[in-house]
Amino acid sequence: WHAQLASPPNLVEARRFATACLALSPDNPFVRQQMAFVAAELGDAEEAIHQISEAIRLDNDYSHFHYHAGNILQRFGHPFAAEEQFRTALLREPDDCWPLAWTNLGVCRSDLGDYRAAERAAGEALRLRPGLASARLNRVAARVRLGKLEEALADFVEVKGQGPDLEPLGTVGVALLLKLGEAEEAIAFGKSMLAAHANDPKLRLNLAAALGTVGDARGAAEQFRELTRLQPKHAFGWYNLGEACMGVGEFAEAEDAYRRAEELGGKAAKFPQPVAEAIQAARRYRESLGDLPKVLDGSRKLVARPERLDFAQICAAKGHGEKAVELYRGLFAEDAELAADPDHRAVAEAAAATRASTHP
Figure 1 (tube, rainbow, N blue to C red):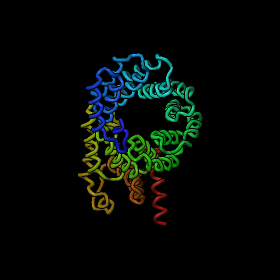
Figure 2: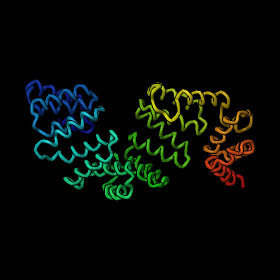
Figure 3: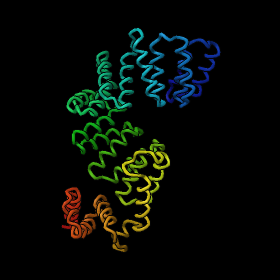
Figure 4: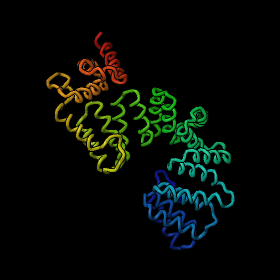
C-alpha cells in the first residue's frame, strides 16, 4: 500500500506485496480490493474487475466495495455496469462514500446523454457534501448541456475559487464560456489551465474548438496534434486534425490525419463528411496545389470554381488576405448567388480587412 502511495508510485512493488498478502489471506476482501486498485493503475482491466468482484462476493454489504467497483468499471468503459454498482452502494447503510457515489453516478448518466439525471445526481452529492468540487463541476457540465447557462455560471464561479488543480475545471470552463459566446475569454482561460493540465485530452479538445471559433486554424491544429498524441486512438481527434490542417494549407498532414481517422473509426463512423471524400480532397489539393507558398506566388493556376472557393477560404484562414480577396472577386463576379451568400461575404470582408491592415 505504501509502495503504491509513494511519489512516484511503485506499482510493481505494490502488486508484489498485495499478492503476498493474498497468499496469506485469500478470503480477506480488503486485500482483494487492494489487488483491484493496483491492477487498475497498471491498466489491467480484467484483473481489476475480477479482484473487486471477489471483494464484493466476500462482503456484499460493504458500500465501499460497490463504490470502488463502479469506479473501476467506469474507468474501463462500462458505464451501465458502473451505474449499477453506484446505485447498489447507495442502497447500503449511509456511508462517507455516498457523496462520491452520487457524483460518479452523475458522470455515468452524463456519458449516456441523460443530463437531467446527471444534474440531479450532482445535486444529491452537493446536498450531502456542499464543498465537493467534483460534484459541482459535474453539475456545471450538465447544466451547460441543458442550456441552463446562468445557473452553470454561478456554480462555475463558486468552484473556480478552489484553484486550478481540479482536473475538469479547464474543460468545463472552456465549454461554458464558449456557450456564453465568450470565445476569447474561453481561449485565455483554457491556455491558463494548460500549465496544470497539459495532458488532459478533453481540455485540448475544447480549447481547439474555441480556437476554431475565432478562425485560428493553426492554433486549433496544434491542440489536435496534442490530443492525438495523448490519445492515439481518438478517431474524431484525427479527423479534426485533418480539418484544421486543411485550413492552414498543410495538405499532406491533413491526408495522413484523415486516413488515421478512417482506420480507427471505420466506414460507419459519423464524421461531419464521409472520410473517404475528405481524403480525396486532401490528396487533390496536395497534388494540384503543392506547397502553399508556391501557389501564393502564382506559379500554378486554379481553374475549377469549387477548388478556387475552397482555396479562397484557406487563404483567408491562413491570413493571406490579398490572395483571398483576389479569388473572391472573381468568384463573386461569376456567381451572383455565391456573392449574395452572407457567410462567404463575411469571410471575404474579413480577408479584405486583413489585406487593408497589411497593405495600407
